[in-house]
Image (cartoon, helix red, strand yellow):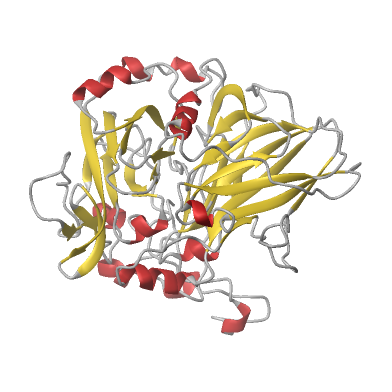
Length: 501
């Protein structure tokens, strides 16, 4: 049910598929999206909220409202045109705008924003406190989120309750999610700007790559005017990194389970496997453009890895992914990491690209224990946070820098580890981690669902009629005009360890 090419076959046009999963050992703010063919650039995403069980207290008072916000960079070109540019070796360049919940910017400056653009307005009541769940669902741009004259009290990120700290703004990198408590404590003399502006992009294009929404108090005395709240100084190299380091795990709070998050003392666990993953920007490999991790650009086979493993089909993949960069030419390959069930893996992402990259691991929450500029060495472990590094599933790696994570491999499956920046992901910057329980048991992995779609070498198992779309009064596959929202795609869920039992 993970919804990526290594676990599921694509949903063919005119078909539907029902994902069924148990939300266990997990709480928090997530989102889903289509995972194939650059389709996320055209939308298809939405939020998922998983609440605490009633018997487990939340470490803050119940908010007066719950608001989900999607911020994203946006290009005029279609997702098909964008992926064609990547295949031809072109860079995507600077986005054409930034969206709030799919809407363009409020006309904060007549010389920059043309007339007639629909914008997002969030309606609130004075004196109330709201939980804002903010997701960067964009393509490749880190965004700075801020609300004019309001503090952002960080309380949760991607399933972990955090130490509660106030921020005036937050850098949210591609694929990341945060929850803030925001109190409506201003005098409402006007409305207030909500801003998502690009980070680490060409400074001459900042105004173009700025999304603006409106926070509207019910007793507001008029529209907002004047300059936007200031973004962070682009020349303060360590500003964003220090902000990321300041986000810490609330070790005393319960979450999916009643025991405190900090009862899992990750800093005391012996590391069993170490992988230093070196990325490289797009390069020509045998006449085709690709991005790499440790010199390998991933090739998705016609038969999903998980199905090939389940049916013992040889030759689909190799369990030989190198734990460090090898002294050999880059290549395209289907090489995956052979993880040890109940092992404890250390992964270091070394970013040799010129842009910030985000990395996500399906099936797990990992501990972000360190990051710094320069090249990671064995001595870098002396800087690790071994106590309250935040557990999450998407971390940023700054250009010319490294980020280290620790992950407990307690979830059986075939799990995708990928660049969240769509341009890097599309060109091959991903790998899978195989975690197999040597004991045959249904206690660590559920059986295959009855509605499994088969493809590739297992196409002969497919029961075609079972998945055809059927509407009331019709049979079979309806007219294409009636199913425009049903396309061949896979949906993936952030921090999706929904198969854990």
